[in-house]
Amino acid sequence: MIAEGQRPELTEAICSSLLKENTSESDLEIYSADEDTSDHSSPSTSSRTLLNSIKSPTESDLARRKFHSIYPPFGVRRRTNQGKSVHEPKSVSPGVTISQFPNELLVVSNGVLYCSACGEPVSLKKSIMKLHIESQKHKTQIKNYLKGS
Image 1 (cartoon, rainbow, N blue to C red):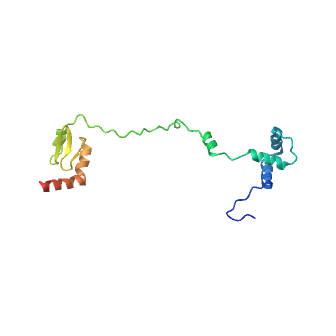
Image 2 (image 1 turned 90 degrees about the vertical axis):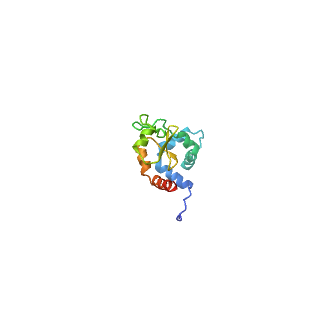
Image 3 (image 1 turned 135 degrees about the horizontal axis):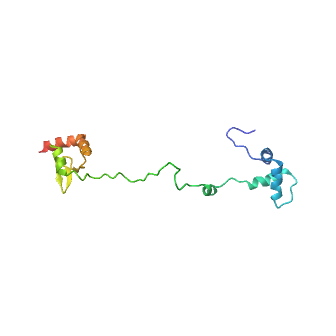
């Protein structure tokens, strides 16, 4: 009797009964006809040789059989890992941006727009400027800058 948690041992009787259930006599005869040995007195020896020829594949055998598709399936497109390329607008100058946002302590230095309160460069895009001006960091930096002046 097999206790719980233990695997049953494969005995010759179990193997031969499994082979008889899963294979027909003609399969065993075909297999035995292919062998070089002429001693086939009992079905247990033929089943033993059949079991010896069948072995579980190793990891290297499985890896060789794997097929890796080079191209994705039809309809699926590859995405490139290029980051967003945000370009500064060519039609807007830093002076125009300063006039659009007065009293925000913006300064132009070497053609680059800086926020003198925060001490960092800011984009010329209007949407990004609005986000920077509405940020809590910018508001507290302006208060600190005006207190120090």
